[in-house]
Image (tube, rainbow, N blue to C red):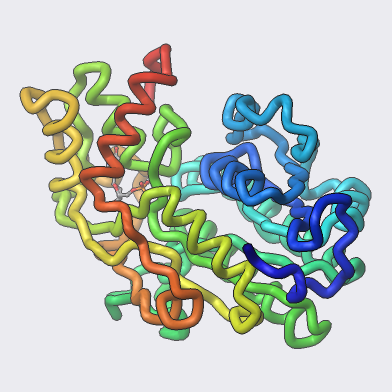
Length: 347
Ligand code: UDP
């Protein structure tokens, strides 16, 4: 069990000293709710702050009777609310954000305001309270970089401001810069994690932000799987329990403070192969159809061709390595869609 000694504030919870009170922003979301599961499982107390814009209370429903979980519906832009919740917490997992390229392309203004201003509010209040913060960022911050495997300190390659896609990467890069500046200038203990295409149960079945969810939903409706472009672009899909394990390791490893970590699998998979795997599990007779990027995302769109993390730092400093193979993770995810998702919503 981890020690609480790396937190700057004395532990004030009523249980055993190794248990702490975490604030999880975005804790009703896909990754956030799995993180809440794991924290409660370890015996911690958790307060979730979520505006339920993309998260869902159903993701936390199985904890309804647990007095160690408090749910607060609200926005990270509500500074008085954030101040109150932060002052009660020992440490913060900051996952609340407008997530995924599609959401941000659809509403770039909201994406940038929530992601940048919201993170600034969290950091400001954390600094006031002396609360350690983990900031969730994204592999999208590498932009179009072709220096694979992508290493945390390497240059990124972000496209022009005339291409809306890049506003998500920029908002997350600004979050990272803010967090690291709070660390350097105000000695706030921060750690940044960059997620690589997390997938698993509780993905939004409408497919926002995840090709895995879109393909599974399409397959379950018996529709062709829509591959954008040639399908040779790659991603490293990371099963959510691995994403959570890496996140918790980053928070609880004292030497990780002030650093940025790739949290991802290191097995690259093309979108074409992903489609084949999902068809293979759900229905091999399903077709695939190729759609030009422009039809999917609008005229000014640029694609990231390869996204493979360098996992050396996470392995050496956090002792983290993803363990769930893609085939196994996809089986579990498809099983969840079949068991828990009753209505086939239009993706
Ligand atoms: N993609 C696709 N068909 C879809 C949705 C996405 O081919 O219906 C592709 C998308 O163009 C990208 C990859 O799948 O190359 C991963 O997309 P996702 O939105 O999951 O995340 P990204 O890595 O782009 O943030």
